[in-house]
Amino acid sequence: MPEFEARCHAKQTCTNRHVVGAAQYLHRDDAFVGKPAGYLCHRRAVLIVAQLTGPLPNDAQILYQKQMTHHLLPEIDRGWLGQVTNCFLIRDPAEVIVSYMKKNNEPALEDLGFVQQAEIFDFIRRDAGSVPPVIDADDVLRDPKRVLRLLCDAIGVKFTEAMLSWPRGPRPTDGIWAKYWYAEVEKSTSFRPYRPHVGEIPKRLRTIYERCQGCYEQLYQHRLH
Image 1 (cartoon, rainbow, N blue to C red):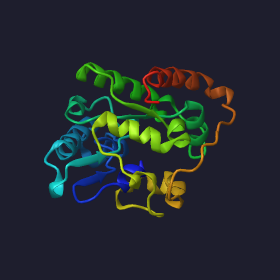
Image 2 (image 1 turned 45 degrees about the vertical axis):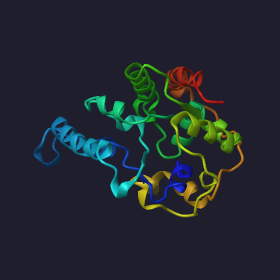
Image 3 (image 1 turned 180 degrees about the vertical axis):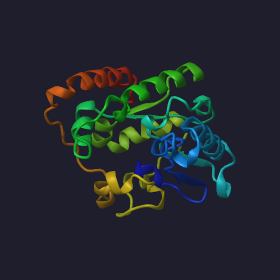
Image 4 (image 1 turned 90 degrees about the vertical axis):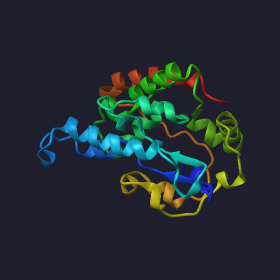
């Protein structure tokens, strides 16, 4: 979310490292450098988790991390998530599927991340003994200032007006997926007015959509609004 990165200053820092995920997700092939995929995932996970849970760089007080749920592979231990403050951003699965089809016309259930998000949400809730904050993308677009204030209050971060705008163009922390997904974000400087983007879900994807919808509704009932 560029709004969180926009407020980073000397006492805060940001990363778009997508956790243990991106590296393993790209190199899960058993033949990669002659090592089993599980071995590589574990080695990369240990190193990256150590960075994400270790001392903050440059005397920062906040380290913002954006993660993608389908990159948190099942073979990677999720225990480290209890060492950080977790927030969940959800979006209507119909909108997600229609958008995703622009890049991949045949998405699999695991590509969309809804099942993994619900699993991680349940894990965090059990581990913390409380419900982590959830915000819905549509609510953010309808009233970004209000929803972001609610989120900041929930996690103990001071809200600033800087969260409502950002410089146009790419950011060094955009990560390896930027060229595939961030073209519209790079053109923007603030939140655009909400407008529904839902198109027709193809019949072949209805079962996937229904599964995603169930996961979405599970988190939606807990959203800040």
